[in-house]
Image (cartoon, rainbow, N blue to C red):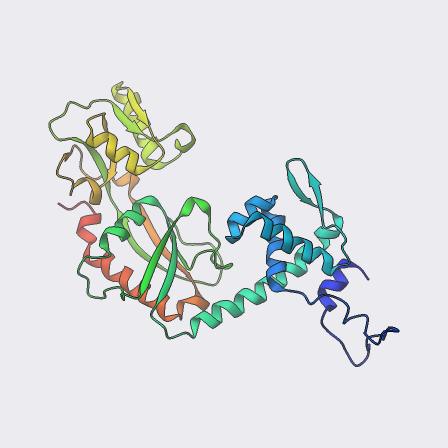
Length: 322
């Protein structure tokens, strides 16, 4: 029996094909180890990440646990290796490749059940994981204690995840996401949350003619492209390249130079002064994306209602209308 046949038939016995009994009285099927969904999940994570360590980080498991579960999964198929062990990681071999489509079908079915189970829970307690960028994450963080028409229930904890990690909503790597554009496809509930305006700031009263901008790897970001245009236009030098908005804020606050910040950050800071109107070509729109199955969950509905309320009430603040 091939590995693929085992994945699709282990644990099933039909009347047309009864299991053969052995001398000990145990059937051939009963000797096979029952398949565990967690082992399938580990197999897929290792296949996608290419190493035990990376798969462990993705699943929140230790490397020894991932190794043990992968061995258990391979043992389900008679101990046949499903990966080539290479110096730089693990690579699926031909046998392992055959299992991927069926394993992904198992994953899709299990995740659908998990989402629908979560959707029927009436509890307003627990953690809701939100994948988002730095700008929207900072805004949501500061709004947790702001008075709103629909306050977030006290039993809910927000967990904000850097969107650069590309969390997959269908696989429940996050419960919802704030993204700069709506998805092109997928079974999602989507609505536009709001648009953040940005402007140029410097420390109040400081000369600060040099620029603060993003790193070379982030040169494609709209604020970085705009600053580069200003550097070429004015001839002012770049004083600092840094990879996060917090680094920019601290450098600008310290008088190192001038730079682009979201208006909700710069306008409310007592040490900063705005040098330009909102720069419309680098406005940052955000869309909320939730899988339709999970949207019915009470905790997710509560977070959606709260987000709609804070974005509506803080519209002038995020638009830079001082």
